[in-house]
Image 1 (cartoon, helix red, strand yellow):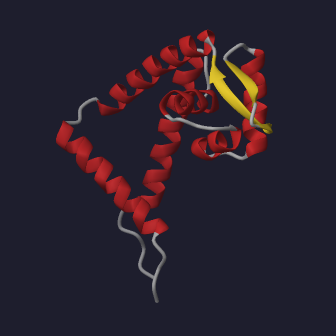
Image 2: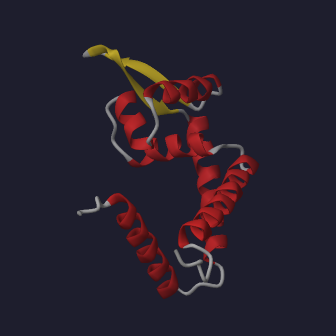
Length: 146
Protein backbone atom coordinates (compact mmCIF):
# COMPACT_ATOMS: atom_id res chain seq x y z
CA UNK A 1 0.00 0.00 0.00
CA UNK A 2 1.46 3.38 -0.98
CA UNK A 3 2.15 5.97 1.70
CA UNK A 4 -0.25 8.92 1.76
CA UNK A 5 1.20 11.98 0.10
CA UNK A 6 -0.87 14.38 2.18
CA UNK A 7 -3.07 14.52 5.22
CA UNK A 8 -5.96 12.04 4.88
CA UNK A 9 -9.27 13.86 4.37
CA UNK A 10 -10.92 12.09 7.30
CA UNK A 11 -8.14 13.13 9.68
CA UNK A 12 -8.22 16.77 8.56
CA UNK A 13 -12.01 16.78 8.88
CA UNK A 14 -11.95 15.14 12.33
CA UNK A 15 -9.37 17.61 13.65
CA UNK A 16 -11.28 20.58 12.28
CA UNK A 17 -14.61 19.30 13.57
CA UNK A 18 -13.14 18.80 17.04
CA UNK A 19 -11.69 22.33 17.11
CA UNK A 20 -14.91 23.93 15.83
CA UNK A 21 -17.02 21.88 18.24
CA UNK A 22 -14.90 22.87 21.24
CA UNK A 23 -15.05 26.54 20.24
CA UNK A 24 -18.85 26.34 19.89
CA UNK A 25 -19.16 24.66 23.31
CA UNK A 26 -17.06 27.48 24.82
CA UNK A 27 -19.16 30.13 23.06
CA UNK A 28 -22.41 28.62 24.37
CA UNK A 29 -20.99 28.25 27.89
CA UNK A 30 -19.89 31.91 27.90
CA UNK A 31 -23.47 32.84 26.95
CA UNK A 32 -24.92 30.76 29.80
CA UNK A 33 -25.78 27.54 27.99
CA UNK A 34 -24.53 24.28 26.58
CA UNK A 35 -24.95 22.37 23.33
CA UNK A 36 -27.74 20.11 24.63
CA UNK A 37 -29.64 23.08 26.08
CA UNK A 38 -29.18 25.03 22.84
CA UNK A 39 -30.41 22.11 20.72
CA UNK A 40 -33.47 21.62 22.92
CA UNK A 41 -34.33 25.34 22.97
CA UNK A 42 -33.79 25.64 19.22
CA UNK A 43 -35.96 22.62 18.51
CA UNK A 44 -38.75 23.86 20.77
CA UNK A 45 -38.64 27.25 19.02
CA UNK A 46 -38.54 25.97 15.44
CA UNK A 47 -40.69 22.83 15.37
CA UNK A 48 -44.20 21.85 16.32
CA UNK A 49 -43.76 18.83 18.56
CA UNK A 50 -46.42 16.85 20.30
CA UNK A 51 -44.40 15.27 23.08
CA UNK A 52 -41.02 14.46 24.63
CA UNK A 53 -40.46 11.44 22.38
CA UNK A 54 -40.73 13.64 19.29
CA UNK A 55 -38.43 16.20 20.91
CA UNK A 56 -35.78 13.55 21.66
CA UNK A 57 -35.91 12.32 18.07
CA UNK A 58 -35.68 15.86 16.68
CA UNK A 59 -32.69 16.69 18.91
CA UNK A 60 -31.04 13.35 18.15
CA UNK A 61 -30.73 12.00 21.68
CA UNK A 62 -32.21 9.13 23.65
CA UNK A 63 -35.37 9.71 25.67
CA UNK A 64 -33.62 9.11 29.01
CA UNK A 65 -30.92 11.64 28.12
CA UNK A 66 -33.56 14.17 27.14
CA UNK A 67 -35.37 13.59 30.43
CA UNK A 68 -32.13 14.31 32.32
CA UNK A 69 -31.67 17.61 30.44
CA UNK A 70 -35.32 18.59 30.78
CA UNK A 71 -35.24 17.93 34.53
CA UNK A 72 -32.35 20.38 34.87
CA UNK A 73 -33.95 22.89 32.49
CA UNK A 74 -37.24 22.70 34.39
CA UNK A 75 -35.40 23.18 37.72
CA UNK A 76 -33.73 26.26 36.21
CA UNK A 77 -37.09 27.64 35.09
CA UNK A 78 -36.38 27.33 31.35
CA UNK A 79 -39.17 24.90 30.42
CA UNK A 80 -42.40 23.56 31.79
CA UNK A 81 -43.75 20.08 31.24
CA UNK A 82 -47.37 19.17 31.51
CA UNK A 83 -49.23 15.99 30.89
CA UNK A 84 -51.26 15.79 27.72
CA UNK A 85 -54.91 15.78 28.83
CA UNK A 86 -55.77 13.21 26.16
CA UNK A 87 -52.86 10.89 27.08
CA UNK A 88 -51.55 11.17 30.64
CA UNK A 89 -48.39 9.21 29.74
CA UNK A 90 -47.28 11.96 27.35
CA UNK A 91 -45.57 15.17 28.49
CA UNK A 92 -45.72 18.35 26.47
CA UNK A 93 -42.74 20.70 26.82
CA UNK A 94 -42.95 24.47 26.53
CA UNK A 95 -40.48 27.32 26.99
CA UNK A 96 -40.94 29.71 29.87
CA UNK A 97 -40.13 33.42 29.64
CA UNK A 98 -36.66 32.61 31.04
CA UNK A 99 -36.30 29.90 28.40
CA UNK A 100 -37.23 32.40 25.70
CA UNK A 101 -34.66 34.83 27.08
CA UNK A 102 -31.91 32.19 27.16
CA UNK A 103 -32.86 31.14 23.63
CA UNK A 104 -32.29 34.72 22.40
CA UNK A 105 -28.98 34.90 24.26
CA UNK A 106 -27.74 31.60 22.82
CA UNK A 107 -29.05 32.45 19.35
CA UNK A 108 -26.92 35.59 19.41
CA UNK A 109 -23.89 33.56 20.51
CA UNK A 110 -24.52 30.90 17.83
CA UNK A 111 -24.87 33.59 15.15
CA UNK A 112 -21.63 35.24 16.25
CA UNK A 113 -19.88 31.85 16.19
CA UNK A 114 -21.15 31.19 12.67
CA UNK A 115 -19.95 34.62 11.54
CA UNK A 116 -16.53 33.86 13.00
CA UNK A 117 -16.41 30.60 11.04
CA UNK A 118 -17.30 32.48 7.84
CA UNK A 119 -14.49 35.02 8.25
CA UNK A 120 -12.36 35.26 5.12
CA UNK A 121 -14.74 33.18 2.99
CA UNK A 122 -16.92 34.49 0.19
CA UNK A 123 -20.56 33.41 -0.04
CA UNK A 124 -19.61 31.25 -3.01
CA UNK A 125 -16.84 29.56 -1.01
CA UNK A 126 -19.25 28.86 1.85
CA UNK A 127 -21.72 27.34 -0.63
CA UNK A 128 -18.92 25.17 -2.03
CA UNK A 129 -17.79 24.14 1.45
CA UNK A 130 -21.31 23.12 2.47
CA UNK A 131 -21.73 21.20 -0.78
CA UNK A 132 -18.43 19.37 -0.25
CA UNK A 133 -19.29 18.49 3.34
CA UNK A 134 -22.67 17.16 2.21
CA UNK A 135 -20.89 15.05 -0.41
CA UNK A 136 -18.53 13.65 2.23
CA UNK A 137 -21.53 12.76 4.37
CA UNK A 138 -23.23 11.01 1.44
CA UNK A 139 -20.02 9.11 0.72
CA UNK A 140 -20.12 7.68 4.24
CA UNK A 141 -23.87 7.14 4.58
CA UNK A 142 -24.53 5.65 1.13
CA UNK A 143 -24.17 1.86 1.21
CA UNK A 144 -21.32 0.47 -0.86
CA UNK A 145 -22.65 -1.75 -3.59
CA UNK A 146 -20.24 -4.57 -4.46
